[in-house]
Image (tube, rainbow, N blue to C red; front, side, top):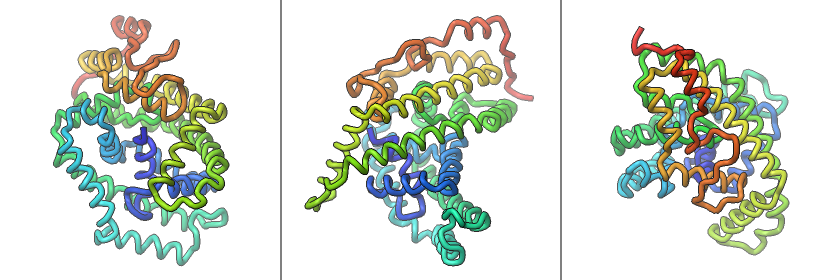
Length: 357
């Protein structure tokens, strides 16, 4: 399952070349970022904006649509998905020719010429802030263009299915987006509460990002060793990709350290999702609450298959691709909401919100 990597690639490298980046370039970039603290801090901010503050939901959706299981699950036709994919590729090709994008890129180059590498250890805070601000604007242009392509080609029901999918798997995906709850047509008062929750929980999300980056850096180091000398005499990109895929699969399945690291990331993600659920109990009305419970208690079959593929991709279980294998004592899609929470809700110990102030 390459969706997770595709999403991170699009997020991390936007504006540097194009939307689609080769695997080896991604690995090299991530490794350099994670080894330098200033760059790592920028990466953390980008990941927080992308996931926690939902500035990358359209990019995430376009990546997910490349998975047949997901595409069919939310009712998107192959023609719709192909149109969006063609548009996405065209955005990458024409991105540098867009007047606003070109201006931002020119300014980024100017910062580098005037200050050197803005993320070097001795770089000034001014240079880092200038470059990061421009980078953020570049990313938002890409997300806006992608969002337009998505909205022009998908129905409101299909977009709703995507948000409900996010809720149904929130205990399994390492990085969640609290804005998924807007699928419940939140009132203005509820939206304000959600904003406050995101701000309060952001430090917890930042810790999860650090944990992921630590594990991914060790994975990159293991990849370096595994790939040493493997590309000698290999001339085609297809064969190079086959070698990379084989190495990744080997490390995920046979490297205990990587398995441990990814397992810990998943467990931390579940704790974060658990805390978010508890806080949302104070926000949702009874009708919204019941819908959330139903999504978690009865996730669609395609969501279960996507979860199994994700866990296989991250190397955190021994199940076969496409098989869903919930572990003990965890609140996962398919597991009912713990009875304690249901009882507290029914007894009125969680205040019910109203639809308007």
